[in-house]
Image (cartoon, rainbow, N blue to C red; front, side, top):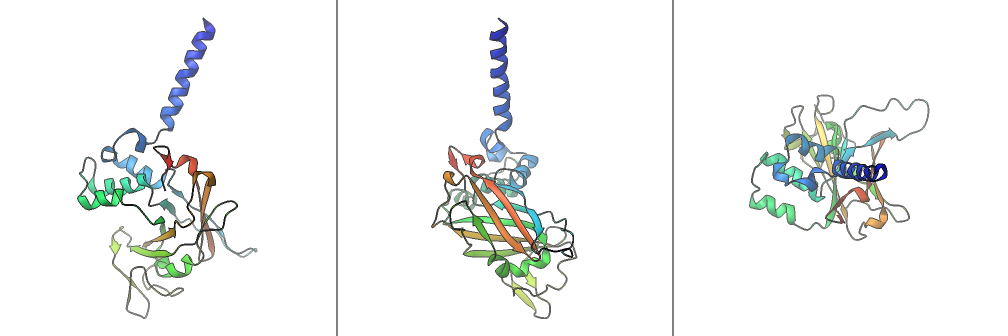
Length: 238
């Protein structure tokens, strides 16, 4: 009798662990996600999380690692697309035809966003992109072939043009590598950098882990993604 009760208890514990591990993307429609659940998918899920910063240069005078709140997000993953639509529409909101098309459209690239950088880096997308890769064990790194920058003021409002010191304005996504952006950097503005990586050498579950790696100014930024955790309906959601 004691052994039977123990077995039943173990089964119950396994059930509790499984339920705890299930993400909201598996348990209810995205339109019913709460604000907190939506934010968690976008910032702390298998497809999104804090990037790790280290000094790009060695030596005793490299300085302290800045306290940037940088999130790296796999934007083309289906749960992330759902969360972005949910964030726009609010809980219970109905997706527009354009949003429905965005949710289901096939993507020719893996799209990854780096959010929360100081605004001054919005103008260095080209230089940063040249040092950005997706890395897998035993395979050549994948370099981005697309890139754009978004600039936001201290209140989180999008800035449609990126002011360049001494040169009028540059369109978002452009700018000259290494040039300063007047008024953007120490004013609370933030930059989101978005990179598109071609699928010519597809990422598969056999790769196990993929690491996003880039150099931003004097710092390396990295974020590992574990493919076994990025599964929806039995397939990696990338």
